[in-house]
Length: 124
Length: 107
Image (cartoon, rainbow over all chains, first blue to last red; front, side, top):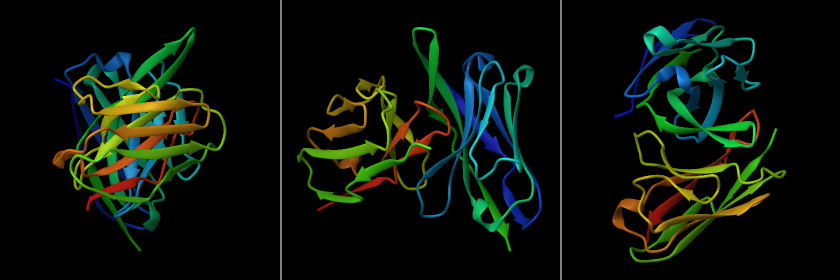
């Protein structure tokens, strides 16, 4: 059974830092792209960042330069280092595995399994 | 960035009804679209990928269609468990983008 368990959320002051972790199990972690998606209180879903199995990295403009995604395949873990946090970063942060569908030689990864989320609250 | 627009924002329906939610992309995304269901306090759940492929374990009363810029999610006969918020998401290119969500309420 695929499981994703996030940790590391909490209350932090504006300008502060936090590191989120996501532990994956039940699948071969190294073979999958992984994502962070967030949801502000009462709002919709917002994609934050992705890291492919080959460690290509993508960020939303809203976090570029402040957040860093990384992975440790030996530990089956995904990370999100969040610096210079702002009040608008307050959200539940979900870790999501991505399944890749190949169209000829191009892969199109999409989130399939999601963790339960971890809440990050940034106080101003 | 590709903008995704869902309609309606809120939908009131009864058990047994057939409902359709629409998602429009600001540019062509071929068929690279997924639909998710989210219940309060829970993580999203994948329903449909590649616009019309039903995820394993998802009831067959859910279906998706469309390509290019216009897509629909149809629930053929609403069950009590289907009342939730639904999101579309494009994965044609980064940055990935979601629709704003459609809240399906009990009439």
